[in-house]
Image (cartoon, rainbow, N blue to C red; front, side, top):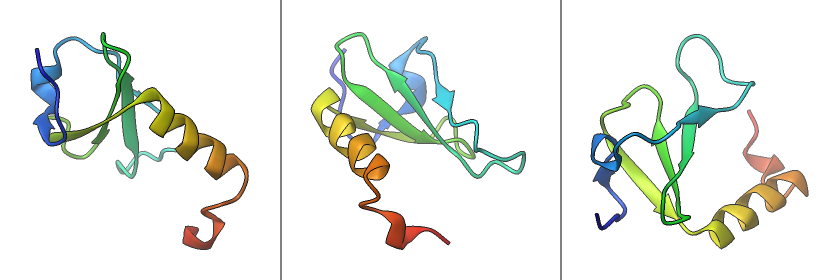
Amino acid sequence: MSTYNGISATELGDVAWQKSRRSNSIGNCVEMAKLPDGAIAMRNSRFPNGPALVYTQAEIDALILGAKDGDFDNLLG
């Protein structure tokens, strides 16, 4: 299977979607899953059958480490 940005999350098969413990009960969360080829998929939990964005491990590493460093604190509500 070839993955691409915008692929339907259902086309990714049986992957283990994970969301943050900070997610709330009204569905305000993003879910991520490691794909068999090592890429990371991201989807909106409110639309679990909708499109998924697919990133490399290096891209996710940069995002998570940047968030830990406070690079995106200006986006907090």
